[in-house]
Image (tube, rainbow over all chains, first blue to last red; front, side):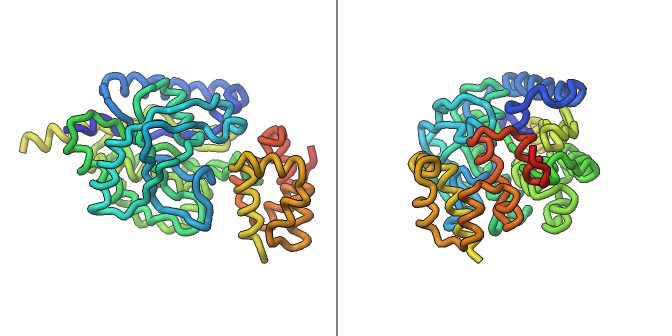
Length: 279
Length: 85
């Protein structure tokens, strides 16, 4: 078994850009949850990250917008939007060999693009920054932004394909979905948060029953969780990899000053593997 | 309607350092290279964020541009909402 952790967390740029703007009662639960996540990652002892994040016009435009794209390189740079997120730009170790193997394995089931020059923005860099991790990273960018994002059930299939691929590896892989939950990013409505949607989604996510969200209508999602709500694709990908595993919610906090319903969660992937081994 | 071209221009400005420098130093010549309507040209020349947003430019092309121009996030939101800071 090689998937040793399945995590998901919000990457609202305000977390690092405007850390002191929200009341401490709102911001502290998120910082504490990221600390708890860091401890869980350390306990899982991964060798490599697969970070699934959302496109924000860092790599792709509407002339060529892939649904899913894997970054194949031994070195990345980020964040591209350092002025926006207030994180110093740096080099990030990649893992070209494993990224190639991931692309080949996943392509058996889900069509995906590859990039040898992927730029990392706050979607990947903000969680890495808060988790203070130096492990190599295989980034996967999911279109949650514009054009024709893949349906949610395809993101679930992507996660399942990632799982089947990395479970054949000797390396210990930690999977992180980065994005969401509800937000109206950089829009006049910014600060509005779809608390009811977020709570229902989180219940399903940590309950190991994401199925109810896989056909969620696009218009309903946007009305309830904002255009930024499309980033639940990254969480749904993690749920697809976790294959029904339950988990725990480390924090949910609506933070209007960060324009986002912020959440941090972990799924118990090891428990599921142990059950499978018992059969 | 050339919303696509406006967004392409702003994507290049945000992501390509050479285009960013041209946006600061010779904006009029840069803007002329894209197929924009007069209204769109004017909105880009003036970085009229509210007008650009109303045209349908994606908010995540506008927010990072405002940040790069040194406009604080609260001020940017105030501009979008028609309340000049």
